Length: 355
Image (cartoon, rainbow, N blue to C red; front, side, top):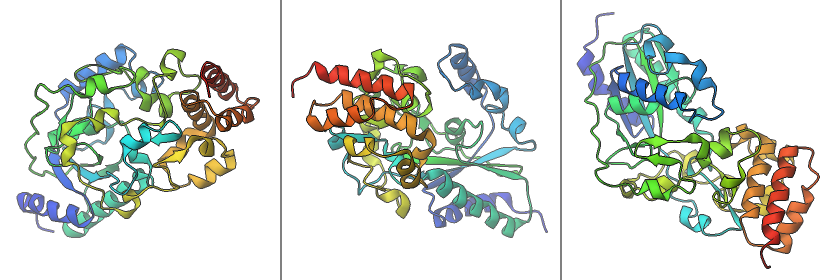
């Protein structure tokens, strides 16, 4: 096969990506030295909490060619996930009887959706130019996805540490194709947060300690998803009714007025009513219920114990009612000491409130 016209191929990637449901695509270089320094400092300060795997990965996260030898550029893609048909996030957060699930997780597991689309993208490139070296990543390896997407021109890293695009806000997923193709790279995105720091005071637990500085040990997304065991008592009352993840920093970001609604049907609407379900109903799920009902959901990976732990905290932060007390009493003798601890805490919190 003749050597491809690399610029022409790059120009064709936009149409190929759009045809597969991606909202944007870019090609970025591997220059991540500043990001590596920031990452190493963050790890040295222990801000990654229990995510010890981040230390074990060493420099493979910030040096793509060490992770996949032969990589000379990274194709980054973006897929919008804002669930326009879901109950408004603010309405759920304002109702202590409901459990708040991060908007990215109320639909089907994005890992499978994005990975399948990105693999199809790679397959079609192979059909066009022949075999080449590549590897697909969708939150599935030691990848600095936001920095790589920035390099590819898809957006800038905001002060809350999420990626922001001027035409789409921050409600989107990212995926990467590490490749040995000598494609021309796109211009790195410039930052446009300006003097805005709305995300910093919006964080319920003050996890954003300064612009571009996130302490995962205080972040509700980390606590409800990644953290194993008991959650620090000083943070529980700050978590409100957030039982899986947290979106507060994105909800106040002015750039999200440009957010694009999800086009993929499995991301457009909530499954199982997870956009606004009563906490007592969710707390009643048995382990079998949890495993079966959340099949195909990103939530399933936290397991039933963390699910109950998170909901117990939310119940303790809500209003006292006979229904809430009965729900907590039903788990008071749960086999898990972690669940029992958080149930007792919730009961103690409610004991101080009138019905």
